[in-house]
Length: 337
Ligand code: AHG
Ligand code: MN
Ligand code: MN
Image 1 (cartoon, rainbow, N blue to C red):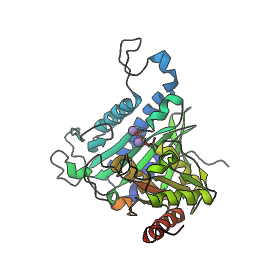
Image 2: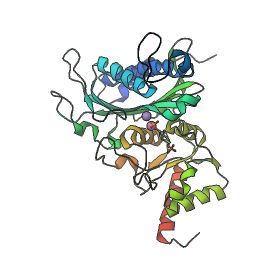
Image 3: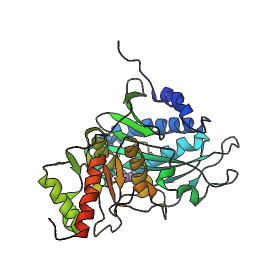
Image 4: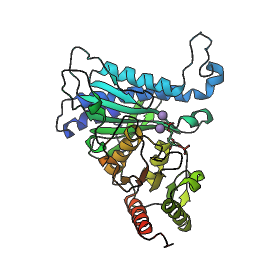
């Protein structure tokens, strides 16, 4: 007998009792993010029609200005979260500062949501997968007033939920609330995310490494040696240039993704709050590991500012451990090969 379809909304409600403070607020919040994801998905799917609908920045035939997709996604997420009444503020890769949200029906909201509305935006014009990443924290400031910066500058380990959406050959939403990782595929015919990947476990090791090897000469010496080693071990290189898509592959097939510090980005390029923390929470929840190039666990880094960058090494637990051991050994004795 075929399995009964379980929709995202149904699943979230069933899992509500998993939280120590099961008040239904987080449930509503996740549902709202699911709605925003569907709206962004619709627009991403139409991206190829840009010449018909109007080029970004120009006016379309109705005289409305056409937004860049990352701004469109940003606005939709903010809109959906503003209406939810569960979110007291957001911070986004696309906004310089955090945005406090007004209380709905004078209810004090307990959560802040941080996101990268469109990840891999350089891929959008060439029909390659892009994504959305989100991260949710319980506020630490008093619930009576507006949210404050300290609500957003919490360590990744404090996340209560995180997830991503990949707009790929199928649109898939993957999320965790700290009790395993589950994936939902959008069925466009019914407009619902349906449970398709239950309790995702990352393979202990794998065949893939994923890094922008074009920057090879700009990496630190031990990183260059590690990359040489990946090649010596006949690992397969895959690099899409959309973090969500590269890590999605690794989550299912095993491997390691690295974005090290380079000469151009001495602290790495990816954003700690919008990219590294949520992806690290998900990967750890699936049994993987995530550290920076100084070999510190990503989720333990105390954020200094909203747009702080970090290097990252993330993926199958054995492969991250091996990378760490390799760098430790190499740094202790740079002469070894
Ligand atoms: P965004 O589109 O949100 O700015 O993120 C792009 C990020 C990430 O998705 C990807 O892994 C990385 O940039 C690619 O950077 P390089 O082109 O430097 O490899
Ligand atoms: Mn990004
Ligand atoms: Mn982005």
